[in-house]
Each structure stands twice: as structure tokens, then as C-alpha cells.
Length: 155
Image 1 (spheres, rainbow, N blue to C red):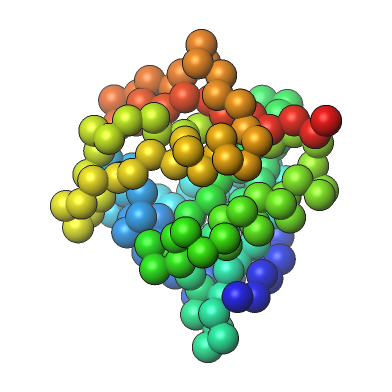
Image 2: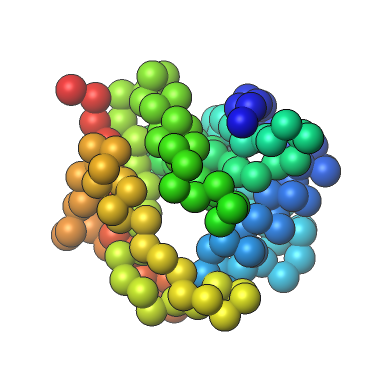
């Protein structure tokens, strides 16, 4: 797998990440139009993107970190076909090398379905394995999302 860094996604990359988002995240978080996803990306301040590409240059994953409320946050999506192959850990390790703190939201239950009808699997075990702490008292409760805050801090 190749990791490709960029500050901006070109239209083709954006389309593939949009598809990944809708395929891998819970259906309740999906975007119906690329313009909606584009608005989400436009709202990310100081964003850095990493695309995960296979040997044929197909994008199979996306990582982004960005500033929000004076903190560094991140989002990450991997195609199911590359889960449990160490790719997510490699992405997180890369992010840790250039950041002292990473914040994110993680769904901590199995109540959501993906677009294909399968259950969205919580990534909490993955983040715990990668030395993130769960901030149980900090939750995001929206009509379409219930998640707990996670944080990694350099020691």
C-alpha cells in the first residue's frame, strides 16, 4: 500500500472518498450529494489528507487531520477489504509522528447500519490498541450520531 499526502483532494479523489464515506460509515452519516461532502471538507481548517492506494493506484482509504475548536482532530476511513491488515495502525503511526495530540469521535455501540444493511462495527478496540484514551464524559449526541471522544497524547 502506498500513502499519498495532500492538502487538497482533486475532484476524482474527492469522489472516491465520498463513495468510501458512504460505503463504510453508518448510513445515518452518509451524504446524498457530492456537494454536501464538499461542504464538509471545505469546513475543515488546516486539513492534511493521506490517501491509501493499492498497486493499481485505487484509493482504499483516507485519513485527514484538521483544526477544530483549537484542537487537532482526525477522521479515517478504510475500505472493509483492507481492515485488519495493519494499514490503519500505519496511518495512525504516521499521524503520531507529526502531532502531539489527536482527537476524534468514535461510535461505541453496534446500533447503526451501513448502507449495505450490515452492522457498523465500533472502532474502539482498534483505537485502544493504538494507545488512545476514551473520554467517557465527552460525548457527541446528535440526531444522526452518538459517539464518544477519543484522544491520543504523546508521552
